Length: 247
Ligand SMILES: C[S@@+](CC[C@H](N)C(=O)[O-])C[C@H]1O[C@@H](n2cnc3c(N)ncnc32)[C@H](O)[C@@H]1O
Image 1 (cartoon, rainbow, N blue to C red):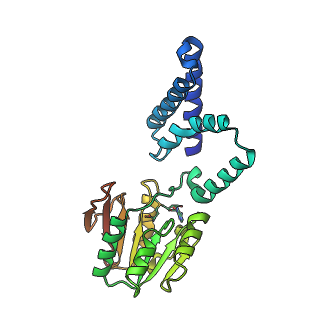
Image 2: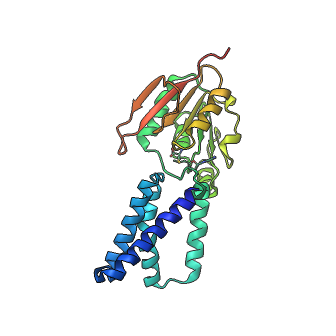
Image 3: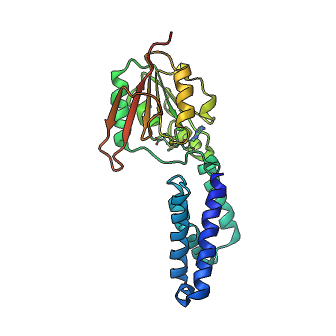
């Protein structure tokens, strides 16, 4: 559905710009044509409430095709580019969360929280290249740190980066299949789309007293124990949820 909507935005932008070019010669100029098409694609993406990460894709889609055509690159270049992007962004085309890295300030704040908790096992759900999990595994060698990531290339990078850390494990698996009862603190930087499903699983499986930290996106219908405002470039907000005792 997400992909269909993205396709619609691009086609809508293209057809409307062709229509304008038919009536107004100014739109024959390649730059005017490309800027108008990208602008219309972005505008329709806003109207159709596409997730925000589609905006740069819509902006750059037709201009990149144009630039690559003018460069006359060999066809294998496109094949390699598609393979690399697929290995990084994996399920994004189906609407999954794309790779987007937390800042070092976020990692530091999570490390401080972990030091305050009685933690033996920590996991990052959707760990990307290990930008949160690996520094934590280095800073707190007494805890077991797991990184769950389903995209092959980021997972491989985190395996390589963490190869010397005895307390670090990277699993190339869908975190929806993980057993959340194993962890004392769970961290996730995902998207509003998955928050309802993941928070139900967390509430059902995490043990009483354990902590879930969600970066940037609050869990629906769940009162956070605390909210931390991080002074990084994106002014990230960390929502911390404590599992209350289960009867
Ligand atoms: C926004 S990035 C966060 C990366 C890292 N946790 C950080 O904070 O820097 C989200 C990551 O979750 C991964 N992801 C999305 N859905 C997933 C799933 N169901 N199972 C495992 N990984 C997933 C994506 O491939 C992406 O690398």
